[in-house]
Image (tube, rainbow, N blue to C red; front, side):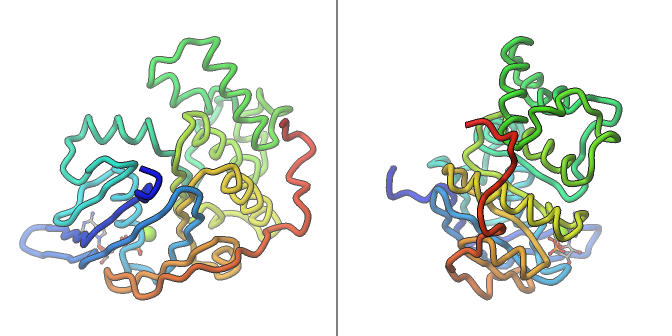
Length: 246
Ligand code: ADP
Ligand code: MG
């Protein structure tokens, strides 16, 4: 188990069929990710990044090939099994935050636990802890409209964290943020990475990709570059936020 990668994608293909038109969105992708790696996925629009993320996130199944996640073959699982794997192992962060409006930060973060049937008090405790972890311990009652874009994205990251995931999948998480706020969010991802969470993040921005420990470039449904690198610290000294509790 120690040597098995957390993510093992082997010869994965994905063909979308619409009517009699076929789009080969992935044409034989192989990718191993070890626990604690921070992978940035890059590539031009239409190259297959979102398709790959949907597969990694167990939101869709490959047409061919194998995907082992945490030692389990998920490529042929049914919808219920995929949902179970998602809630057990994965956390998701999106470009558009996807928070419920008129709903407090705390309730937004509790939501994944509601679906899992975790009781009220335990939910509250865990959601509060997740919000403290992203530096929002003093904003529990704020609704999205009362928070900045960067704070909303941190609520979304807390929501991804609350289920104690092994992997966080983030599709353009800084796409709607200004550059200073992007730095804050990337510093937070780097902290989570140092805490042992595996991160796979799609980005268009080279600056953002520099913060990862590995860069994978996708082109026309194939991986054309895969290199490890010394990550650039998003922030010189991690002052992440005074509110982060140990
Ligand atoms: P990226 O995220 O890199 O922009 P996508 O993975 O979204 O690329 O798309 C890869 C290719 O697959 C594109 O040609 C796109 O048009 C096609 N595609 C993506 N999703 C679907 C779908 N649900 N049905 C049909 N074609 C799709
Ligand atoms: Mg995309």
